[in-house]
Image (cartoon, rainbow, N blue to C red; front, side, top):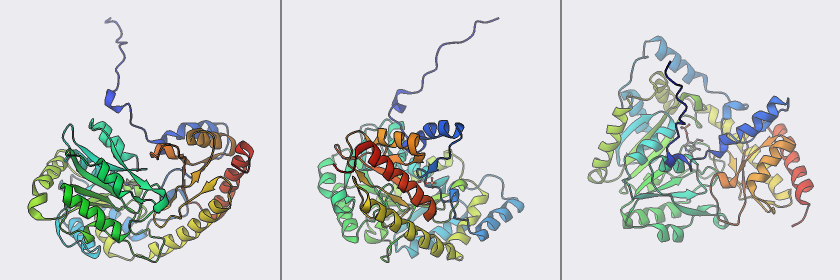
Length: 405
Ligand SMILES: Cc1ncc(COP(=O)(O)O)c(C=O)c1O
């Protein structure tokens, strides 16, 4: 008998800083669930956990594709009918200089492919702070040092241009915009997009504009695509089905490359090489892209109505609760209140789960300015559930910290 192999196989050191606070908290919640408690999940942005339903006609399209035998590998960039529909969507968004489009396994894979195809060792990409943690996770995976720029809470969470200027170096290759934003729910103004475009031109940066929530706008002002404001600037606009079309489990996203053709050619070839290496995105699900983008959009009216009502309820609660303040969200389904407490927001969140069985995510899980504390609320549940959860959070704050500062 050979002796048993007991030497520990360690994970790569570059993974040490990878955290995904949104799901990491689940261990605390699992323990409570095992004890028989019902935990209210205000932590994961999955509308299907609540009273939102996938439009039936897109389910039919995928079902038909499967029955019609579309179950083999798809072309690496995506099926032609979907690529054509995404080009149509780009045109509706006002993007006039489209150079390439491709379909991926969720926007998550677009982010991975677009960053991996860009950075060499020693280079960096500017990412917002706070940010959606996938960006920092992928940069860590590639061994790329983080270079974050602040979003300014005092300016409705707009990117802080002076901070971006300070952080750009000769090794900076790109900048990430998340618009509408996760975790803050903010929208970039046209003026801000123009200023970021100017900065990208001056420093030869590519802009990655994550617009996965572009149809979930809670104001009367329309969403403005970065690439529509800056047709000449190299840009990849990220879009997908998960949120707008209520199918996060289908894993369908895409990238729209725009800018001067000569400027983006070599980079786009690099992205396509990576896409070929991973074979293809989910095949039958791609048949839903055209009916989703070009078919009835009725579900969006209902989704926006619910989200506006839940955003208003959330905002009122933030305004009425001692120690809490919040910039009103204008898009997506996240609120990012600031909280004045004498301990870390991670302890706040973990104790809140244990004592009141309400799960939100700590601001330190997204990155924040030192000395500030926040938590992210997903306001997808119905009004009754939110009201009960917010009463629990208010009780917790009062019991643990007292009413006043
Ligand atoms: C800003 C942002 N980008 C990308 C993603 C990933 O989306 P997908 O489900 O398409 O991978 C999310 C998911 O929550 C997100 O909030």
